Image (cartoon, rainbow, N blue to C red; front, side, top):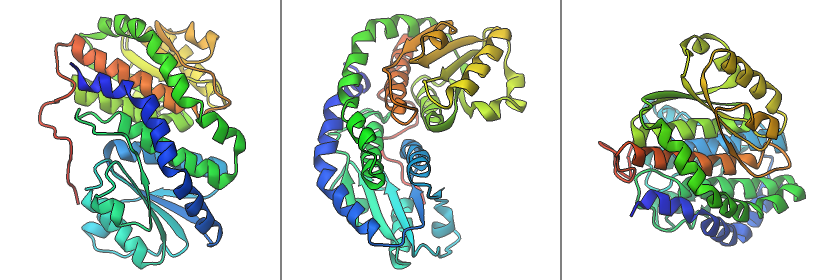
Length: 345
C-alpha cells in the first residue's frame, strides 16, 4: 500500500470537511477584519505550507488589492527585531502546528496589535492555540512524509477565507465544486500512470507557470525532489525567459502549468519557444489547443479564471510525482533523510 497515493485520493472528502469545520470561524474572522483598519497581510510558513501561503498572496492581492508579505522568520527568531504589524492580518501556516519559527512570528504580531490567524491540521498544536483564530485543515492523519492533502486543505481554507472577505460570490460557489471535480480527475489515473512511467529515467527537469499557478510549480518541483530525488527547478515563465533558458537543450523535460485565463498568453509563448528548442514538454491545461502542443498532456477541469485552477494542477502534480517515484523503484512515503515534522527557527 502506498500511503501517499491513498492520501491524495482522500482530498475531495477532506476538502469538504475542511470547509464544514471552518465556515463559521471564517465569518467571525471576516467580521473582525472589517471592523479593523487592515492595510496589509503577512504570511509565515515553511516548505509546502509556504507554497500554500504564496497562493494566498496572489489571491489576496488579486481579490482585495492589499499588499501581502511572506515573512522572513529569521528577522524575529535570529535577529530579534520587532515588526510593526498593528494594522496587519498575520497568518501562520503549519501542517503539524509545531513550527517554532512561525509561532514566534505570530507571538510578535500579537504583541504589536495585529489580528492573527493560524492554519494547522492539529487543533491541539502550539500554533493552533497561539493565534486569535484557528482554521482547521481537518485532513485526517497524514502519514506519508510528502504533504498532499494538508497542502490542498490549507489552500482551501485560505481561498474560502479570502472569497468571504472579498464578497466574491462566484468564487465561493466555484470553490464548492472543487472536491467533485478532483474526484473526476481520479478517473484518469490509468492515463497518469502510463504517461508518468516513461520518465522513470528522468534525473532533472524544469517546472514552469505564470501568476497564481507559480506556487504550484514550486510545490510540484518539491514533490519531484523529495519523492524521486529529481533535480527539479521551478520558475515563473517571466523569469525563465532570461538566463535560465540557456539550460534548455533537446529532450530536456519541462512541466508547464497553462490553464485558461490571463496568464495563458505568456505561458503559450513559452511552450512555443520550448518546442523550437525540442524540449520534452509536459502540459497541464484546460485549453485544447495548448494541450495539443505538449509531448504529453494532462487535461484539468474548466474554471472561471486562474484562481481555481491551482487546486487541479496541484492534484495532478501530486499523482505524477507519486507514480514517478514508484516507477523509479522508490518509496514515496519515506524519502531518504527526511522526517514528517521539521523544526526550524
